[in-house]
Length: 262
Image 1 (cartoon, rainbow, N blue to C red):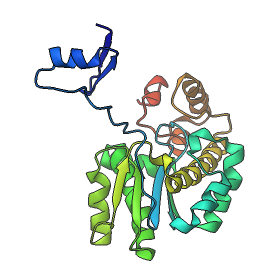
Image 2 (cartoon, rainbow, N blue to C red):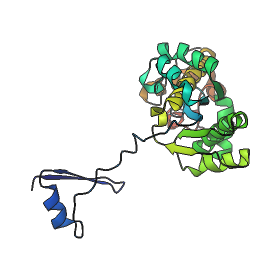
Image 3 (spheres, rainbow, N blue to C red):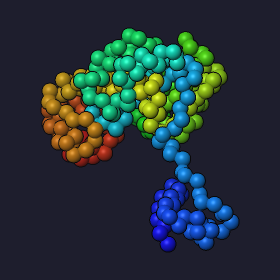
Image 4 (tube, rainbow, N blue to C red):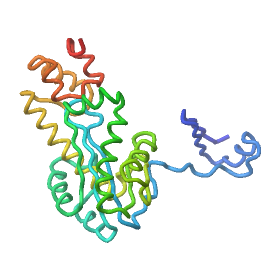
């Protein structure tokens, strides 16, 4: 019929082709018109019409190094400053570009950063047994601190789990919800969240470098096979005590280091 149909496990269906109308009329009884174009949740229309706090994290998927959250407050009139800096999602920028950029962001705007180095991270995870709960605590703490100074600000957060995790924590810390709280995937598309992502990434890299210096060997970012090699090398140097100071021990990588989980 000249129609392609793709079904996703999420329940979304995408139809394309020249005979779309006839296909829908024949197989989707009750539909008189072709289905509308599916909304792309990854490209949301994020408003910047009021003072805004953007919040993002770094290090969640990295075995070595800290977990970091950065929150940044920016007024709409200052958006041109972010653009002039070249602010974007940290995943699209090199470390070389981000270091001076993060320094300028922290000098120019009100920021709050929370860095959870591996020793404290492992202790917090042992209590919560859920990294998203630990992450929500960091986000809420940084955002609430900025809201104390800027109570009328909107809040935009990169969504990483159930939206209630941050919402309930903010309500507890602030006594009331923010004027506007938006949580969407890939929120780094918003310039203020992009600024937060740059600050968070740079602080993560700094913490990673501290862990690398303490380990006495080269480490590796992420959680793939090269990380396993570095983990075995670091474990041979300092055993579990050292690993507890440089790595997030609940990661699967720990299972692949003989003697680390015993």
